[in-house]
Length: 140
Image 1: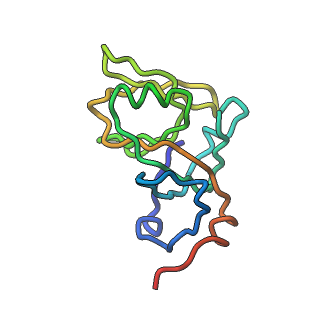
Image 2: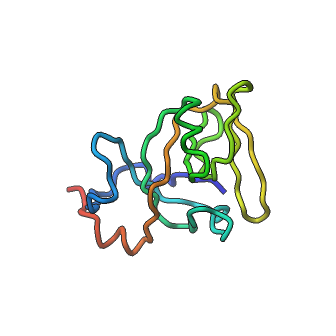
């Protein structure tokens, strides 16, 4: 249900060659492998399948930036629980919380305190494992 890293996924495996239309100048990106299928649903604004790779763009974890990204799929790195890939559904400035929704096995909304969030990434695109293999140059 969350985006975890297996020991073999922690080290860079290579450079991924992406078309520039996927990237905004001056932004920080990374690619991670998704584990879980909670966002593989027609209700999700972006289908995220188990085993797919996610192009993540770092965004600030402040109220204004998060509000501008409501409706997006985000990967939220929490201090205690790791990285969660979910649908950002609300930001409550007065309570300093965000709500993230998952759709499988049932629809559930989780609430996180902004003080417990280390980093936030917007999921810009998903890639199948086959697409990643084709576009990856191994690190030697």
